[in-house]
Image (cartoon, rainbow, N blue to C red; front, side, top):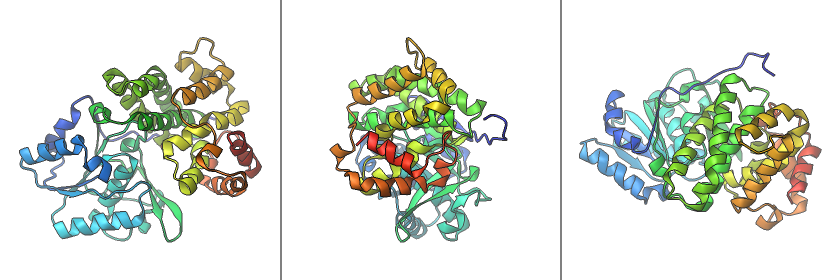
Length: 381
Ligand SMILES: [Fe+2]
């Protein structure tokens, strides 16, 4: 597993800490940015987080343009709308993405098309970007996606009904600004789902065929932080230590999979998101334990290392799998697909769709045939 050449993609610059977001004006200056375009979603736009950012920039005399229409699983048309607004505003020289994965992904893509022009399709695929875009700062408001440190932006091509990705180290932001205080107001179900997304990133980064010592070090620390703090952050959103640890876990897990990969859990989760609009983290959480049971024959050593990172009393592959099941249960995440409206006759098509996502399925340590994918879905029906 460690014999092949692997690519380690560390982020450019991460600023982490409670209150770090108040440094935004100075950070813009370091990037020579005078008029940023801020991208966020309508939910975050209504929060105090956004009110504070807007006030901070105004107090510092910084001119900016605000786009608040980023939607989940953002379509290419959303990027187009942001581009038109930026061009109409004129003088945009930098981009700030504030929010969950969607706002940060659109910010990355916008920085490219504003700087270099062309259609976003010109940049899609793996390694098709050879230049950096406008200076970019990404600011997460959830603790899960890790998008602030990943060289991946995912958009939806609604015409072709496909998810399309831009994957290149060139789209890593100039600054990842991680302020755990911005996650304090997440409601419990979002804390649970996004936290399980972070855990999935760490576990998949650890067992991927692309894994390496760099991503394993990050993944193990992230798994330890999640097991110390996710239940507590879910029970008591005001527990700052738990919030801080989950924010760190999310960023570390993002760095881990940025230098390794996500796997079958993410591939199997996509049809649940696409067909039934199950939030990304919840879909991963529902599939995590079942998919790891499938992977178990090829991951015995890694599961022991993960069980140790979780500080389990008896660190074995079975105790690791049971902890995943218990955690999902404690976070009150639905354990059955039927409970969220999936019927048995959808499974063959979902399995075919998931197996078609080569980017995620190819590095899975145990090959996943369509019949295997059907079996995993059946086990959580
Ligand atoms: Fe994810």
